[in-house]
Image 1: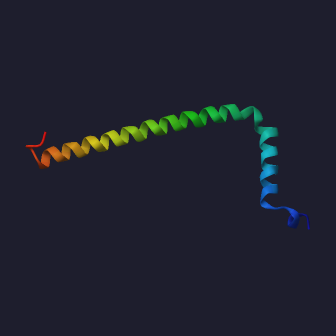
Image 2 (image 1 turned 90 degrees about the vertical axis):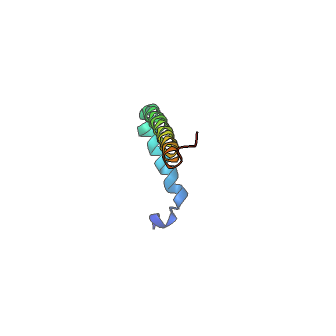
Image 3 (image 1 turned 30 degrees about the vertical axis):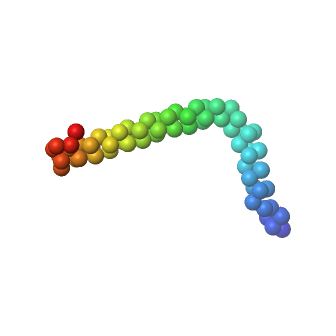
Length: 68
């Protein structure tokens, strides 16, 4: 009977309370880790894009040697 009264937002509130009570000291560390991961991901995506454009330019020069 108790489970029928719980809705989706109830569970979200309960999870937030649990995270804030037991996970609050760990939140800054997790945020720092997430930020570093995003920075590395963006750097790798930029590198991949640069490599692709360099490969494309190299392929264009091979197929058309007169192109500058």
